[in-house]
Image 1 (cartoon, rainbow, N blue to C red):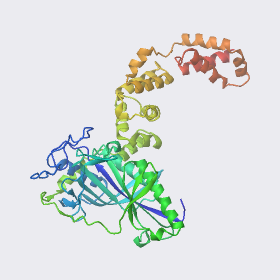
Image 2: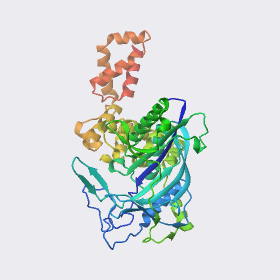
Image 3: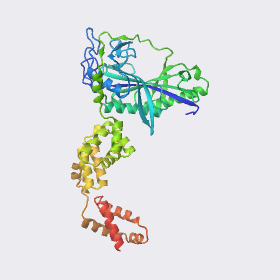
Length: 487
């Protein structure tokens, strides 16, 4: 990137609220389904005579997000109609919220970590609305699935306070973590629960960023469906705009909407956006306004679960884990929950952390699995760790057992029994093999006597080879050292 320019990035993050039983305005189930059009009710299809009914739990989750983001909550809750026709909106309008009257949250801020530095982004607003149906387009036809129609959706709009693709992705990851830890959403991009619009512009580095007239021409990139896509789209768009600067064509560029084409690896022009679209907002007449009481807000505030940042601080200060280990453990709530359940089985925090963050997650990455996909339970892992700690199984054997159990969805203890794995801990058994190795390696004895003491590691390896990894390494080392010293 050319250092003569500064990048301004704003985000519009859409996240479905998945932790409610029903949709936001209908009694249809709010759950992901591979069967198209199976979670629908007449109100989702806009049948005549149907009326929306607000899901109180969805409002509660939205207000919780607003509180976490340090936003101002409204005195009264309103919904509005956003009028535009599209096949995925049977009514011809979307029930949503605009800034007047105020949505569930305005003018907040969020601190987050990016590459070891604390950053802060201002939140313009967060509002609750209904999601549209999903469409898939093929060569000669399109399909539409109304399962998604009416799913409660949170839209979060930031100010252009982000200055790189890394910052944008770090912010999005932090928000995903908040939604997951607070029990608002699974925030699973594979299920289409997260989508993002990205606004990118560049400006001369030496100009005052606080003055809007110094900002460059804003380009909106619509519906980026993965954090990797957000990173790539931003980096491409920055370079594209800098190239326009270099060729003198930047001032001719109109404000526009583009889309991210993953196959081409570039943003593609969709339409100009010189004027704001007039959606003819007006208050939804079928949903009366209702008061948000201070007592309800306080109850919601008191019931906010422990978030990732709080767990990270706890892991570092109380459990004495390193910042690196704590960061890895809290990145995904499912991993953090698994870790805490292992601790409940009596495993020391540092030992549990090493097994989970280094060994288990490394194996899952190789197997292209997620922790939610495995049958291994925290109790099973704790039992395996205990076997290793007691010396019944070597660390090498333990790692092999864990990999096999993850690959084949087996209980680690069953794997140990089936393979007949048992570490040799008997001094007599190990000493017998140590003596065999020393007989086979007479030169090693001379090397040790001549000061090459690291030869002992080679000899330990020979013992482990003979025992197929079953000898206790610590006991083996001590016996070898004792024999070498005595000769």
